[in-house]
Image (cartoon, rainbow, N blue to C red; front, side, top):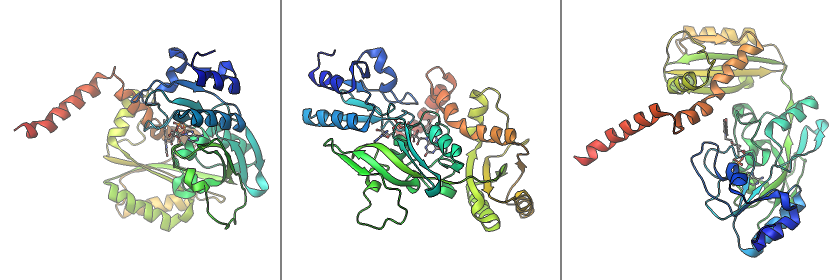
Length: 362
Ligand SMILES: Cc1cc2nc3c(=O)[nH]c(=O)nc-3n(C[C@H](O)[C@H](O)[C@H](O)COP(=O)(O)OP(=O)(O)OC[C@H]3O[C@@H](n4cnc5c(N)ncnc54)[C@H](O)[C@@H]3O)c2cc1C
């Protein structure tokens, strides 16, 4: 039991083993995914239910002690990292799927549910939960909501905000706000849930959410190609939408610099195109009906009109996954490039810094 009276009280709520204070125990909570930010919390508290979260928050509020909510700790801007001395509330033990309702295309899950588990629960019910991002095995739905994550299918399905029907939130006072509605045509009063989405935990702790599900697409076409500039990529996207409409599900513009990082740091990576290109794109189409012929025609015309340089279409699921891996490994490659052991990056960074500074000294 801790000598800190607040942590002792929190231990009574969540149990001794769920309040962590040892340097090794709190280490993984104290720094972010990229290892850029670091702060030692007063303690890490791991409640397992909405009621426990509410009691923990009430105690901290009464003691005037700041709190930092944390989900999977995969955020890229330090929002889940303590500055120092806060109580860090980890939501990962609130990880149940409460209810799946395929008839209403809705699912209710607790905030600490990893995104991938939400996708799997939706698939088990014959439905799609379309939010998808490289960190989905670890990132939680509470973190997705609090960062209003977009993911790779944002073009078609929108951000996490657009995928949300209702929320349950513990307010800074410790009161529970129950807004877990699954009604689509809900036009009553203020839509409070939007205050908490994208708020990075500043207005309350999300403990559960009711999310939208969709029919699973029956046909998917994945392609990778090259364009000469970002402007041309925008023109291509508009062109493809004109040609094949709403079935454009994902469109990612990727620089050659990002691809170089993936090739350098992720073993087994292979460039999809034979020749060099400053800008490449990954596009995915999905729909209920067959569309390979339509997509192939659209690309042929785009080539004829010089909108694209080259393009490959995945012929198998494995090929499509390999194309996606090139895109999804970019964050991991950037992280490895930035790690202290990566001298190449450090030398380059310092070189460019001195170049930047040189004119100022003169
Ligand atoms: C490899 C990788 C790829 C990514 N790709 C994408 C992408 O394609 N598109 C995109 O939009 N984002 C992407 N991200 C960022 C992604 O949005 C976040 O990593 C994810 O949504 C955060 O979830 P988390 O559970 O890890 O939250 P955390 O990192 O733990 O927290 C993020 C923020 O939310 C707050 N928070 C967490 N849980 C709660 C809660 N229950 N209630 C209130 N506040 C809470 C935290 O205090 C913090 O401010 C990527 C990240 C990685 C590492």
